Picture 1 (cartoon, helix red, strand yellow):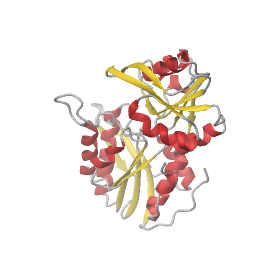
Picture 2 (cartoon, helix red, strand yellow; picture 1 turned 30 degrees about the vertical axis):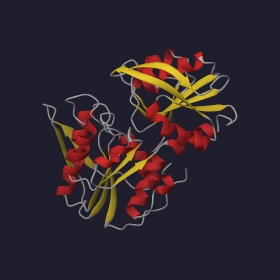
Picture 3 (cartoon, rainbow, N blue to C red; picture 1 turned 180 degrees about the vertical axis):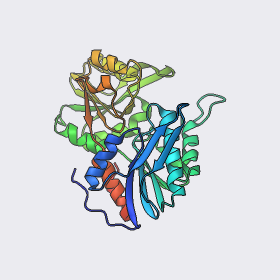
Picture 4 (tube, rainbow, N blue to C red; picture 1 turned 45 degrees about the vertical axis):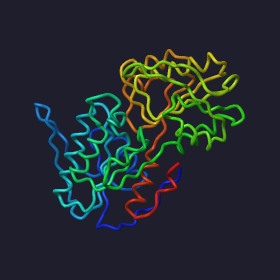
Length: 323
């Protein structure tokens, strides 16, 4: 992906800042944009409270705060809210919360009695803290955009993934697989770009983080299968899906997901499973165990985010980045 052109300022200036969640990604974004990383001091008091201070003048600036709300989710979310408040009080002209990973996105509805809609609450908190707009990557459910009353730019990592897999597979031997009914639209878009057929795994979830594969819709026999999802958490769904596809005669199974949450036994399950490769992005920093796993391959979304930041700052369209 080509590096973006020099930004033409519509505001007095534009500045990119990072929380503590993923400074490496922010540094890469700044490198793509050709701009310095903004200076902000973030510390924690002995009791765990977050203390932060902006180290430069941001009056009238167009500010972009990069902070995936990944593990520890609550700490990184609170840090983001405090940063937004600090920049608003420092008279920044516009504040864009850049969320490569949107925590609590899976809790987007009441599927049982007496439960919160946590994804909506997070949206309300970001608005109340005074964010002017949100830039997110692969939300778990597209309707989360409707939880906001401020502009939301929803990017997809699929163009980055498709470019990688087009070099690896021939369209004549590849089948795209959705790991569940909820991901069919995502997998269908992927299959359209890859010009490949689509299969669906009929999955029933028996409890939180517990899934059981029921059957496979579509022909996968003798095919190289590519399972497409938005995130991998405990990898239970991924491993069972791989086993089911191989059981139906698939030649090989590769998986891809934008967000490598990889909680609990996920890395061990991936390492010992028959999956050929798991391709993820750097929307979330990998843990030590995952970073040395030979089956996990990481692609960067920094150029994608840099192009979106440039377009937002210039007041241009980012529709070409959508899929």
